[in-house]
Length: 105
Image (cartoon, rainbow, N blue to C red; front, side, top):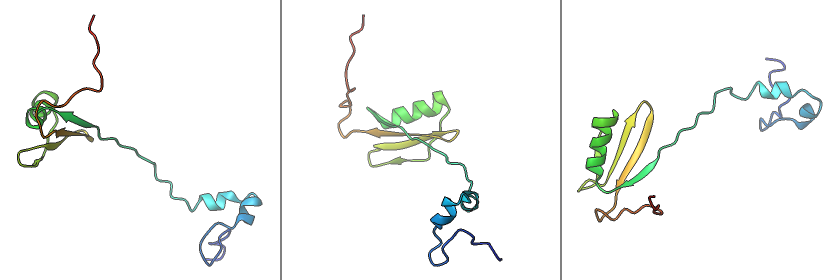
């Protein structure tokens, strides 16, 4: 179509900066896909017993899991409503320590 590439260099499909400088930036913006940006986060928790913890998340908190990794199990991903939490067990049970301890009053 005539004018379809207005504002673009034909050899490499980059914006023609003269077009931008002339204030015709709206033609460039039409070429940018307007898909919303989504973010997700998956916390990674170190636990003393991955099987006990995964079963707690399943039975008490309504999460589900598909499998355990390792033999014996040392990793699991529990999921619920699009939320994923990664659970990992250290080689030595009971060796997980918090970053700091707080004195209780």
